[in-house]
Image (tube, rainbow, N blue to C red; front, side):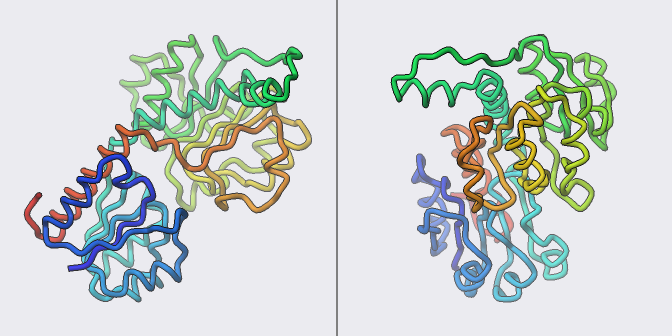
Length: 310
């Protein structure tokens, strides 16, 4: 029985993940390209597979059509916007997620980006390495207003960290947890108010048709000139072209992006910005998170393929 494993960090620090798959009688094909696979490669590699452990690579209807034997898709992560769930359901393909595994790692990284952007950490580091010891003035994070869009597990973990910085917290979520918000002093606000009032806006919502480009030109224009935008969720939540213009023109203070609409970005302008801290979609890439996600994904895949756990 053949399975394809695409996430680049899967098994990187814990080779026993591959041993578990092989011990269950599976023949494993790995993504050895060093990058996210495109649809054509996915179609080719999945042709004879019954199982898939996938990161952010495309699992579209077209890809699924090329995989007639596929029975189980184990998402190595939480977001399933890259998977055509309707097509999977129509085929009876089981889809699972590693809920909870990356929560703390992503929340840590979101806070790291907030600090790095606010205090211009990467710019100061670059200049120091060039023997430039001039002083650079930055902005405070302590006591500021944080707007969280998506108050799920990761959003709540970010809120907990922000409380240590005595930040006022505004948040938006379709499924509002009144009890949690009241207990933690979090104020409910819509996205327009968050963009207008918050000093830092951090995105932690799932991507769907209602959230695609939820940070658009109009909302960017409503932000304070000292505002910071953080995105560790999905690149498509932000109109990247509009954000690039805002950063180049200095209309907001800065951004910390672990995700982009196209990864890596092709426009050279992204790489010249001093008010941007870039990430390579690595917010969940800690040893603890990747190993936990890996074992959960293996558990889910073996269960859905009807194989004994190894």
